[in-house]
Amino acid sequence: MATVTIRNVGEATKQALQHRAVRHGVSMEQEIRTILDEVARSGDTPDREESLYDAIRRLVEPHGGFELELPPREAMRDPFDTA
Image 1: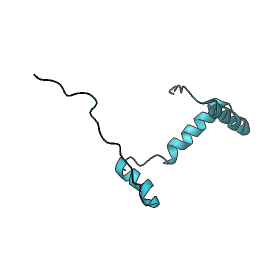
Image 2: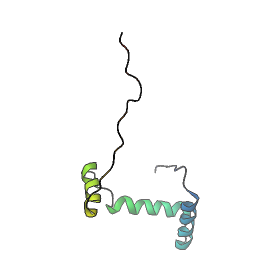
Image 3: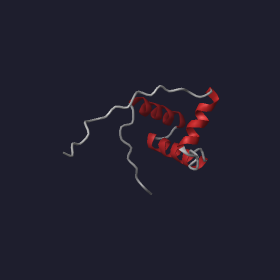
Image 4: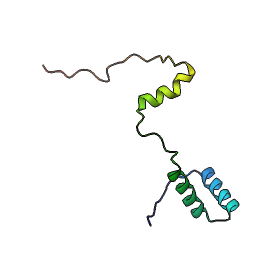
C-alpha cells in the first residue's frame, strides 16, 4: 500500500477532519482514507475531455457573459539596440 504525505493543510480543515472522524468513531487517518476512496471511486472527477474554453463558457453563459476591460499593453522594457 502506498504512503501519501499532504502538507500545508489548514487548521480549520484539520479540525473538521478530526470532528468527522470522531463522529464516525475512527482515527483521522482512517477518515481521510475513506474520503479519498469515496471521491476517487465516485466518478465525481472533472470531465478530462472538456477544454478550458468549454469549461469557462459553461460557467459564464448562464450569467449572460461578462465584458472585461483589459488594460493597455505596454512594453516591459526598451527594445534591444542592434546598432
